[in-house]
Image 1: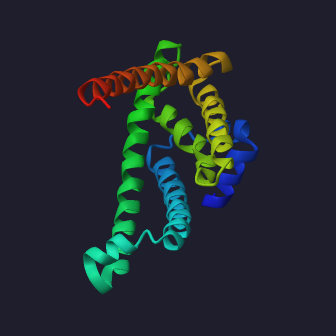
Image 2: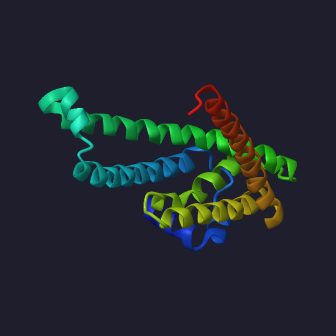
Length: 194
């Protein structure tokens, strides 16, 4: 199946899509799909940022630093940033799927890590729309729903256990991050009083 057909099937018929994924499939195919998703998503972000930077004079700082080649330097820096973000996102997918897999195991999943990775990578399909205002939030919510469906199918978990495997680490790490942010800003406000 090609990229767009795969994307459409994941979005419109996730239960069938995840149930028909071959058990012998490794990490290569979902990784390629995820990298293509990230490429499209980051290019859309770059386009949106370009529409914002050009009228606001955002390239003037780069132009003043690098003279006449400033826009070219800014463009090259933008491309380099996009490439780095694509591969950083891919690496974080491996780590995130690993964390989710620990909770999948805790909630009764018995299949291998690669099954969790497949659910997380293909379930990220709506992420292509993340740079579009309002649709980005809806895409994020739908991604979580797709990942839950994927985990349920690939790990043979009930929907409730799949929801728990996704939401418990999300809430846990969100609470830790929020706590650290509060401590950091508390420290900043004490260290640098207004």
